[in-house]
Image (cartoon, rainbow, N blue to C red; front, side, top):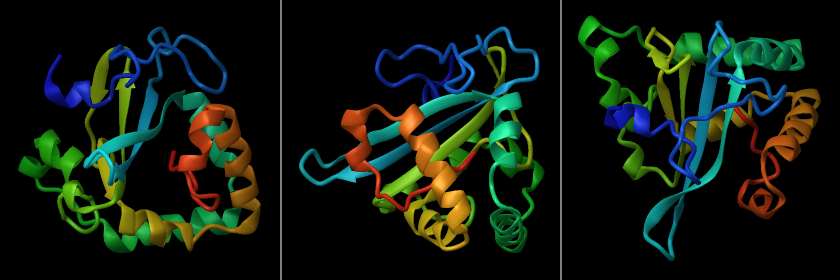
Length: 181
């Protein structure tokens, strides 16, 4: 396992994710793949980033949950990414280190941000590499995306956060913070 794949391991025990957080199916057996998403926030006391949340979702659940987003939110987010994500060159496409350590929109190192999110798609134990995944977005982009979300979508994502984030960790995530899946 290379360093890039290690970024997408379950933080608490450094193992692969094994089940979908939503349907609880075994994702390593799921033929269509799954998404791993992790969010980090800088901790001033420890002078390091700490994980805020992490989860894996099978792609079937991703589709189901995405359909719960309002049409307004979906359109706003699609337009935002179309306007701000530049096509990757062949060398950029395979530079996974850069894709997981720099913001896909700003191009800045995630180490300069106070928070960031990373995501990757896997099929069984292999990372799928395409134009969209893996990706990283910095705190400033997370903030910009928050502004594109309708109230209906916020209500839905709040319920989803309650499902996947342990109660002792929920206070680390601002109330208006949505999850990007």
